[in-house]
Structures are given as C-alpha cells and as structure tokens.
Image 1 (spheres, rainbow, N blue to C red):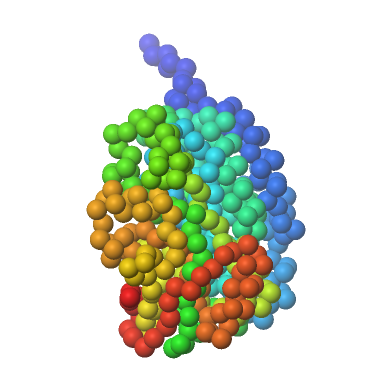
Image 2 (image 1 turned 30 degrees about the vertical axis):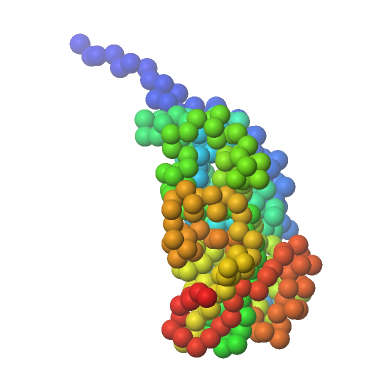
Length: 356
C-alpha cells in the first residue's frame, strides 16, 4: 500500500514568501529615490538595467568595482534593535573604496541574508542603503533578500554590497601622481566608522545590558555608548567627485578603513616615497580624535602605534596633493561640505607610513 506523503509548504519549512513580497513593497519607494537617468526599469526584473551611453563621451572609460560588508558592527545593531543606519555603513565601505581612483559610483546592489524575514526590519535596512546611495550619488538598482531558517538565528542577518563606478583613464588619480614634497590632508571621520568592531565588541560591549549601552557617558560628551558606536560611517564619494569635477588638483586618496592610517595611507604611495604623519606632541594630537575612539583605545589598553593600526583615529579619508595646491584643494573640499586639515608630507622612502 502506498504511503501518503505529508503536505509541507515552503512556509512550514520556515520561508515566508508572502512576507518577502511585503518586504519588496516596503522598499520600493526608498529604492526609487536613488534613481539616476541611466536606470532602466525598476525592481522586479531578473537583472538590473543601467545605460552606458554616457561612457561614450570619455576618452577611455574604465569600470571600477568594489564589494564589502559591515562586519561585527551588525551584532551591536542587532543587540540594540537598531537597523536604520547600518545600510549607510555598507554603502560607505564600497563607494569610498572606489572613489580613491577618481571613479564616480554609478550603481549599487545589496545582499541581505536573514534568519527570519520581517518586512519592517528589511525596510529599515534598505532605507539606510538607499540613503547611502543618495549621499554618494549612485543608484540602488537591485539586490537579494535571502531567508535562511535553520542556518541563521531568527533575529540574525548579514549584509554585503557591490558597487560599479566609472573613471576616464587619463584622468584617474593614484600613487603614480604622488611626488616628493606633496602634502597629506585629512578629512575627519564621524567616529569609528565600520572597522575595529571585533575589538570594540570585546572591550566595551560584551557583558553590558541594553540599559548600560543607552546610558549617557561623560567620557563621550553625554552621548551613550550605543549611539557612539552605531553612528554611521561618513560617505565622502559624492563630495569628492564633485570636488574633482570642479578642478581640485588631487594626486591620490586613501580610504582609512581596517588597518587604520598605518595600513591604508601607504596604499596611496609609490614604492619610492613615504608619508610622514604628524601625530602631535605634548600639547595633544594634531587633529581632533572623536571621544569614542579615545574611549576604545583606553578600554583596550592600546599603544599609540597599535591604535593607529586599528582605528581611523579621526581621519576617514586622506588626500594627497602638491604643497602649492593645498589651499585650493581645501577650498574646493569645503565648498562641498568637507572639512580638511594638514596631517603630513611626502618624503623619499620605501612606500610606508611613518609618524612624528
């Protein structure tokens, strides 16, 4: 006698396709707000369409791509049930990597892996991604929401992003333009940004209650630890592209991410030159370091060298230009809302960052 198979739906297996449809509906307006003229169609297709017609006006168009995630910062967002800014972090980590070559971010795609799909959570996450795209000037053209019951905890999720930009090869900037005697300018960070969070979680988050994490602290100027560590990463790409278009004579840039100033500024140097960075002296640092970074350095007991190799130390982006052009570069950056300050100079060397 044939055994009757039990009726099991996809929902019984833990995947709610109806909730997925509600999530898509919830994000449509946010995604549409990022559209550029090159976007063809909208959400719902199997592939995202983006016109490349504008590339014909370039002498030698070069596509520049990047991908990244947010990492351990997500665990803190999940602990505090705050999901509206991590999307900005995701975009920042991608677009500010490709802008250092002078590439304009064109379009962005995201991947959201989640244990249990809840439309309101996904809407908050994607709204943050859309806000990041709006700030950087690129279009959010598509993405993927994947529900993983049994693989991930219901409240757990992870994010990944992918950006494509374009640069005209004769106008690209980078280490090949850097010369002895150039100066290094720093553009302030908003805080820890999105790197160093495994250490942050270990020394300042683990073992604390939500109440403790949301309590104002004098060491943070009255801000709570939760607010300070979840402050979104500054997005520089849009303002930097506009500055370059206005004629800012920039030779190279470095996005200060994992590895701090020590292991990112060197990526903007040719093999025969060093960057000498002025960390200040007895009177204090040469620039303002956000209180939350000072708090973490103290909590972890880091030496100064360790700190500059772990956190951004108040510098989210470094710009290198000729000394005689520094005032002009700072003026054009300021016109786009980017404060900047001198932080070092370029000298003969072996492609490393030195401090004084």
